[in-house]
View 1: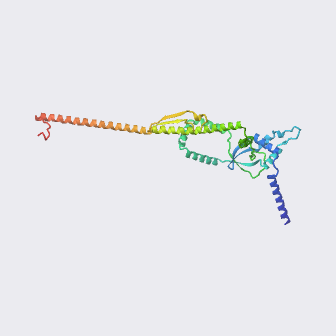
View 2: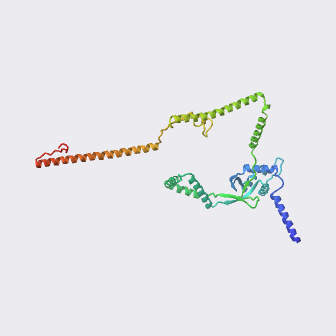
View 3: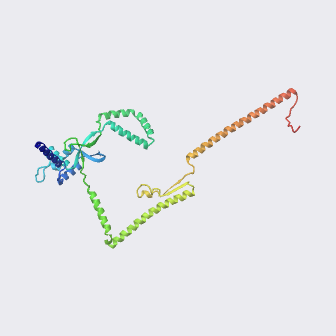
Length: 353
C-alpha cells in the first residue's frame, strides 16, 4: 500500500512539473518579446491554412541560423556575455519561447497525388457549372497542344532536370518541444502594428472633439457649419442629378416608343473614381424597334416569298406556252382536215344557231 501511495505522489508531482513547464506562470519579459519580434521580422515566414485558419509559420533551422547572427549573439557595450553563443543555447531559448506560447510546433504532412487530383476535379466541376463554355476552351487548348507538340516535349525534358516541389499541409504535433531541424513552427504571437494605435487614438480624439463642439471658438464653429452645409448641398445635388437623368431617359424613351436612349452622366452610378463618374457628359443611342434577329427572319421570309413567286410565274408562263402550242396544233390539224375535205369549219356557239 505504501508503495502505491508513493507512486501516486510521484506521478502527481511529475504532472505538476509538466504543467508548470508547458504553462509557465511567469509572463514573458521585455527581452523575450523583443527577440520574438526580431524573429518575426527577419526570419522568412510562409502562409498556409492550419485547421481552417490562415497562419504564418517558420522553419526551426532558419530561425537558429538567424539568431546566431543577431545582436544578441555579439557581446554588449560593457563587454557583457552574449545571450546566444552556440546552437544549443539558441534552441534552449526558443524552447522557452515555445512554452510561453509565442509559437507552437506543427507536423508537416505531404499531400498525396490522389488528394490533389480529387481537389482539382472538384474545382473543375465547380468551374464547369459556372461557365458553360469550358468544353470549347478545352478543345481549343488541345488544338494548341497539338500544334505546339515539339515545344512541349522540350519543356518536359527541362522540367525533368528540375526538382519537383511537393505540397504539404500542417497538423498539430503531439510533442511540443523545439527541435533544430526542418520542423514547422506556427506563430501565435501577433503584435498589434503601431499604426493601429495611431488610428485608434485619432478616432478617440475626433469623438472627444465633436463632443466639445459648444466649447469651440466662434470662428471655428462657423467654418464647420458652412462646411457641413456645403457637404449636405453636394449630396443633395448628386441625388437630384441621379433622379433627373432617370426622368430624362424615361421621358425620351416614352416619346420615341423605346427607340431613343439618352443618359446624362452615364458613369454616375458606376463603380469608378470620383472624376470618372462625371465623364462623359452624355451617351446617346438610337435603336430600332425590331431587333436584328427579327429583321433577319423577315428578310429571309421575304426572300423565300420572292423565290416562290418566281417559281409560280415560271410555271404559269410554262402553262401558257403549252396552251398556245396546243392551240397551234389544233389549228394545223383543222387546216389539214379542211384541205382533205375541202370544207372550212367555223366555231359557232349554240345561241347563234
